[in-house]
Image 1 (tube, rainbow, N blue to C red):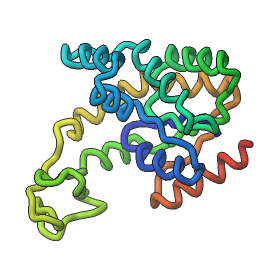
Image 2: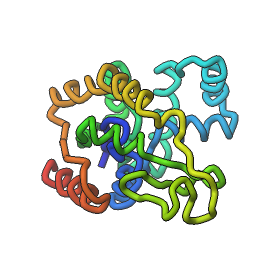
Image 3: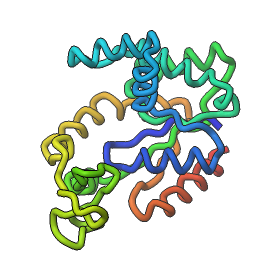
Image 4: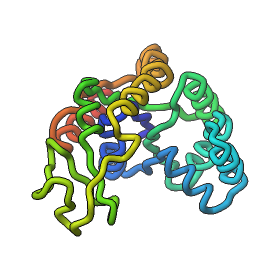
Length: 217
């Protein structure tokens, strides 16, 4: 199965992408992971991407597309894949269509995770990370630490990342609405969009997504 996963920041895309890929036995292809892997391996694409990032510029679409193409051509992606974070705009979606067409394959579905904007802001802005171990994550509403500002696991200080501030979250949402959201209409025209609510326990959202994808077949 070949799936594109879309949704606003804070909708739980990363968590759902990992769970769905495992349930469907297909690789989870994340643009963030692609960048990190190519940069750490010092591939030509990685060096090119790093040159833009070091200069504080966005990585051009053609570099992102080339990385995605290389990853989708790996043996483990022959039976399908789940794309997370790509395509990010309509031009990338058009390039993906062209790429898949040359390979003689098509997308099966575009899974759109919906979440109210107020809830997205609350989810992200309330997140607190442990300074000692960033894998220890708490939330001021949903998973409070026993002692405010202190990690339950290791006693480290809990802090709010700069990109988790409410102002930054709203900026990220605006970027999503103007750049990424239009791909939903693009794919709706192809009859590929499957929309589910992203609210509720993680397991419930995963089950909802699997059921919706099954019905879409």
